[in-house]
Figure (spheres, rainbow, N blue to C red):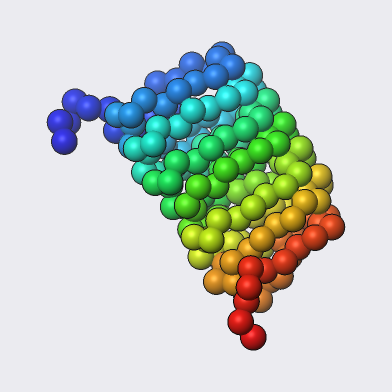
Length: 165
């Protein structure tokens, strides 16, 4: 790879006064806290070539409403969408791990379908998601420390996906 090619997006390269942003194909990684406190950001189009996102990338993006993760992202680290109060819809692609407080305080999030690729779900991933009342399917392999329901959720329906006894 040509060293002049941009492979990481960091805070110093972004404008925080935009309502939407498209991450170009040349960006392979978004660094820690890259969009933190971008209160006006409503829509993000991530590159299908994006491989990694850092901790707290979208922390406090209070206007962010929807995001689709590319199939190339395997890990949602700690605080990824912390306090994204307007986040209603998220497509988790092929995520394998969801870290502590990844969706904490996402008050508008109503339903989440966790992908079958999920291996590890931190019990506090959805803490404070007070509107999360829809069906949440969790692959058996993702249950951490015997946790059966993410902490801080009010769920009408919660079940694991076809677990063997």
